[in-house]
Length: 380
Image (cartoon, rainbow, N blue to C red; front, top):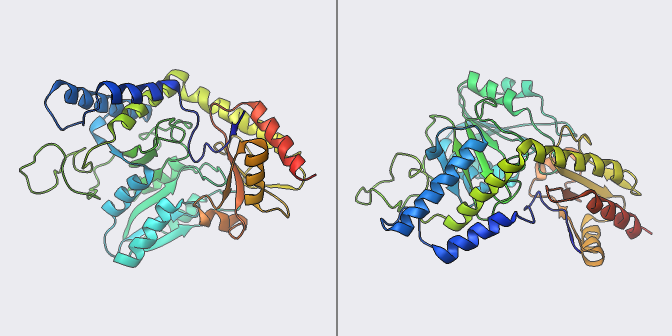
């Protein structure tokens, strides 16, 4: 029996309802959304809109038209960042960002001369919000932060950062790749202007799904232009949501699967999901301490992190451990920089990377017990 501990990359397994919804749509409908007036196409429209409503409801948002679907969170983040920032603008971000944010910003720095302030967190991944306010400039046009680090797991003070952004009337973009579906998120209470989400991680949906939730009136220019299924005689991209930012054929089957995944989360209760994962993280942190020669990174406090734990075994390459876990024990973990080199700068592992386990809702204590035994046996 295999043990999957890479849920921070992609959650697995998915709820059965998700696979059933994708299969049923592809077999019994299979039409594009917004591309026809016949019955099955209108059914596709209805199913897409229902998913917009489900996602809006999950994040306490009341305008489904401003739930924008993309192929993944990387596209969503690029859409928001490139749609807001103009030549010479200044942006504030964290030292924990995934390359989906960091490479996008660095590319704009090179291409349109934006300036970037990276707010350093400490070794445990905590950000001092005073550093954010002190670095705001007259031309600061965006604040973008991950809600939870995909390397250290550390949860950032999003509500407080959003309050600063609101006070200075600066758009606040939150990367919820590691938090959506496992942490309660309320875009109103948490002062979030734009929430970027992905379907295939803790939202338990299919790959190829993600998007933006736009809780503001700031202008976002389209990343792509083209067919939307409506206003076809008009030569420019429509200026209303969702068509302003959605162009081309949507991944209808994937979005329908995502809708079922969100329903599953709501039925289970996001607090219950969070509590189960938090208990597993607490158990894992305690058990991992018994592993010989282990160095665990981050806060090591289940109340302050999502279900991500990074560690190394001294004098052994992370990739070597991961390879042995997979080939000898059938345990799947992640090794490397996890697409977030700045976070590794904080903990001094940029040259060596880390092993990372991503615990999911469908993991159990036994998975951790087997991992811990394997890590000790490897060193004998």
